[in-house]
Length: 492
Image (cartoon, rainbow, N blue to C red; front, side, top):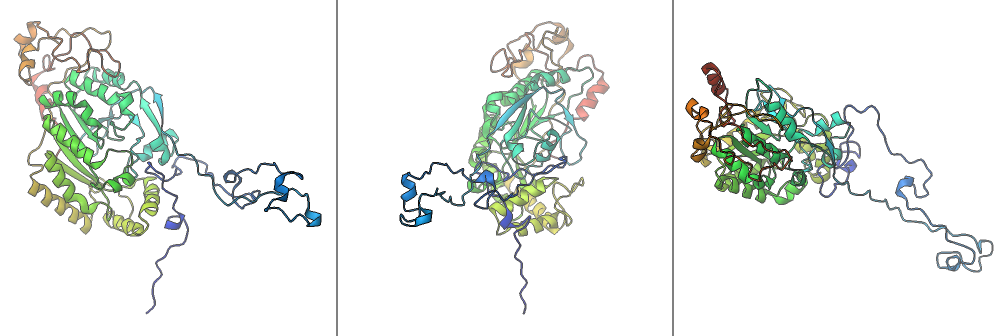
């Protein structure tokens, strides 16, 4: 019986043509983005003596002479060779390529015109999001946000994880948007496109500044991250959790540290994420875990184990998504597979096609997050059984939108009604404050000061008289009911 040859030639998409993996980086190369009009390919022009491009060959020092020791060395012709005696000898260098320097992370500051971005996707449990950074140093090769770097004229590959942009005025711009007349609060998600707790947050502290603003205005907020740095802001998160204003989701893709170093090289180690889950839960902050993304034959077998360890650490909620490969991510992920898992690369890609109706990516609402077909049904059943046995997702959490009070702009005058919350601060806050308490004029400015002092970490000073807990006064009962009905459940 004839045997079918399943080998692949050394062409595009084959393991033999895959670029070498870079230590500490997820992408193995910079891919051409969809807005790029030209393309550059390196070729050999024939001027290199070794047959390699000139840029990769060491220059030969011209230090040989007739009377130099090299002319009579073992590498030169014999002393009695006649016509060759005294000729200049050029040593032949080995065919070695000069390794390019490892790409370093650079951060550029920009002034953002606005921070709030809205979506109407039925697949996402929030409709408002903010992102203090562009690009993400975590370097997750599967990140669906990589193509956003194309809008900056940069590659979704290595550029996305090395050429970062920080929105230096993130807190001030968000404050201005929350202070606009007619603004209606809805839970804001921090970190929908790039991780708000990526390593540069240690220095820029933009995420912490936004959390301080959320606490000041009593605005509900959700956080998605895969960095244990979120535990740094435990003081702010605990204060928000006391008022039912926050939920934190930590993404855990695998418990294998070796696999995590290739999948998401600069994110926190899996065990550190579990420690962050434990720390947040012990402080009273509601925590969920995202097994995202599930990659066939890479980490799909770890789903139950991740959920079990997360439950043991104190998580109450869980969710999962299947790998998505939009735009340039398809090429990046295939190169990564061929570099790290050449033995199963084609098998993984074919299973993804089974989950995506025969394509590498399915952009349709309703199926893009979980996939379709028998393999998607199997994942749903496994997740449902595991969460039921572990007691996850037993109740829904709806954040409170009734406490919001518009912020006071820098140099502005506080509202006449933003006063009097000493009673509420003593033992938790109610959804509304009585008119008598408001008209009493009693204000305690120390009740809700930022935990880091009178000035936020972002440099935006807090007002002397902080806003009220509830913004209900002056609004009709019908509007209050509409706000209450509009509270977003994060676990539908």
